[in-house]
Length: 119
Image (tube, rainbow, N blue to C red; front, top):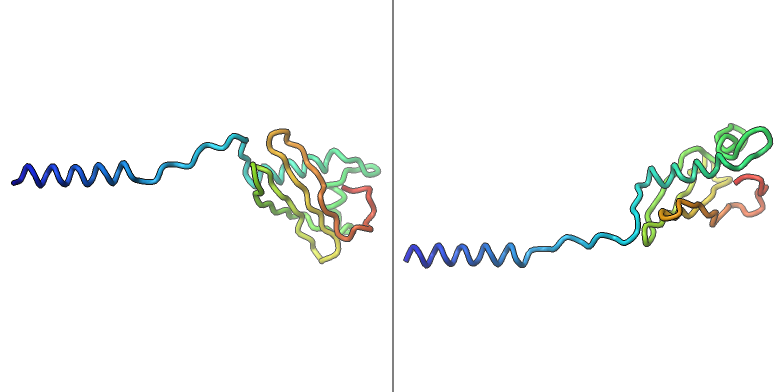
């Protein structure tokens, strides 16, 4: 009787383990964190010359009023959407960050009539 009980318990435990959740498949694209996506945008902005400085420095200056904080959210296939957080609701930008090529694409500038020197 004990042998049947032990066998039954072992069978139930074995089925629980076998039917458990399987780990999600590994994505076929590189994964980057929000901090990495924001860093890629900041590097991109440092490469754009504006007079004697670069875009990131200009955005961080008091007279530009765009805000120096950035937020990101994952989209699909590892692509990130990164936005700057405006100080006042005057100017904000949205970029798309591609993790495979580590490139940045400006996808939105608000308002659209803002001078196109930066970014």
